[in-house]
Length: 323
Ligand SMILES: [Zn+2]
Ligand SMILES: [Zn+2]
Ligand SMILES: [Zn+2]
Image 1 (cartoon, rainbow, N blue to C red):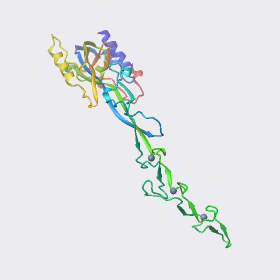
Image 2 (image 1 turned 45 degrees about the horizontal axis):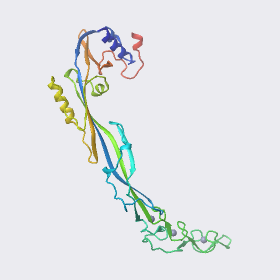
Image 3 (image 1 turned 90 degrees about the horizontal axis):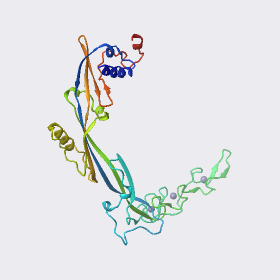
Image 4 (image 1 turned 90 degrees about the vertical axis):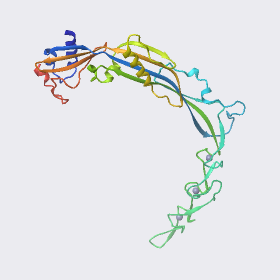
C-alpha cells in the first residue's frame, strides 16, 4: 500500500500543476487486479516489382536477351541481400540481367533533332526550314534607326539587314533532342525493386476494469509472454487450460494483415503476453478517483480526472505555495 502511494506521488510530481495533497492523504479504498492480454501477429513478406529505366543510347554492347533468356522477377537470386527476419523495412534494387533493349527515340522519331519550336513550330520530326528570319524589333525591319534631326543610322541589332536569326536555334531550324541527347536511340532496362517488410496486427483484451486505459499504454508496457511461435503461417495457439486464451489467439490470427498481390509471405510470428494491471481507487469523504499501475515497469496511468488540478495547462503553478 505504501508502495502504491509512492508510485502515485511520484507520477503527480511530474505534473507541475497537480497538487499532491489527495495523493498523500486520501484513503486507498480498493486495489483490484485486472490483467490485460496483448496478442500480436507479425507477417514478414517480400515484395517484388519491375520498373523500367530509360537513358540515351550512345552506342556499345547491350545486355540483351540474344543468348540467355530474361529471368522472371521471382527467379532472381537475392539470397545475398536477404535481411534479418522481421526487419521493419528494407529495400534493394537490382538490374534484371538480359533485359536491355534499344529503341528509336519516339520524341524525335530517331532523328536526334527536333524542329525548332520557335521558328518551325508544329513541324513533324524530319521536316523543317533552315535560315528562317524574323523582323528586327529594334528597327521594325527597316535596317535603319531614325533620329530627331532627320538623320538615319544603321541598326546595330540587325547590322542593317532588318531581319534577325531565330534566338532559339540560331536559324538552324533544329534543336538537339533532349530525350535521347541527340543520339536518336534510347536504352531501356528492367530493374527489380525488392522490399522486405513486416506487417503487424495487435489486439488487446482488457477486462471491463481496465477498459478506459488506451491500448498504447499496454503495447509499450512490459509483460510476460505466454506463447511465441514462428511458422510459415501461424495457426492459433493452444492453451489446455484456457478457453479464453484460445479464442483470443484465434481472433488475433484472424485479424492477419492483407498481403499485397505483388508480395509473398516468408514467415509469421505470433505472441500472446499478459500485462499485470492494478486498478487503485482512492477515496475521501464522498469523492473518489482511480488510477492504474501497468506492466512490470509499473507505469502509472491516471486519466483526466484528478481532484487537485489547478491551472489546466496555463501554468503559474501556485500549487507549490499551497503544499
Ligand atoms: Zn528556330
Ligand atoms: Zn534592325
Ligand atoms: Zn530523341
